[in-house]
Image (tube, rainbow, N blue to C red; front, side, top):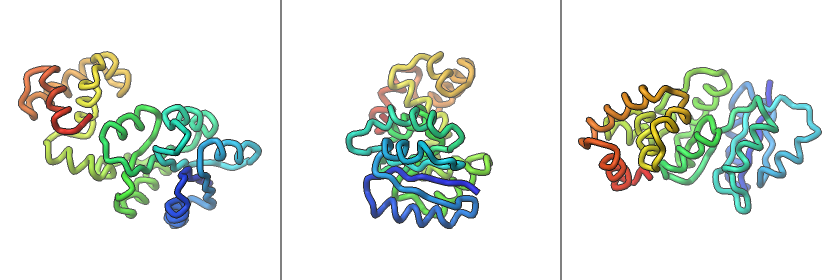
Length: 203
């Protein structure tokens, strides 16, 4: 059995999500905190098997892109799930790049969220469909989620090598993905692809 903690400054949401987590058999305790500092301080002396951290992206006074690595260091075995009201693909990509294992929007289907969390805890392969809005967009555009994420990084100005490092793949694989991207969205190169990404609200 294992423990989970929730970091969210909205008590109503934290309480509701705590109830959702209680439906997962492998989680035997849930703690809620209004910010990441409290979560770290309250658990400094506790000998618990922390397996899951659920965090909002926007916590007033705390830059979660700074705190994600700190939470990773404090709870090295825990999976990190971000639940946010943001529907920005950029925020999702940033969260995953900063160390989150999974990202859901707060309007996501609770059953899918439970399924995604169960997959994380059992180390089962995570289906892209768990990224609800992202999966729908990918299907509509005709690209995989990874291809869209690579496009987002490209539009932000990252080099092929930098993108390869972010996704733990080779530059040749990045090129292969981008060739598919260019063909699907009907452009011929990086500049046009970046313009397309901005025009379609991906960044």
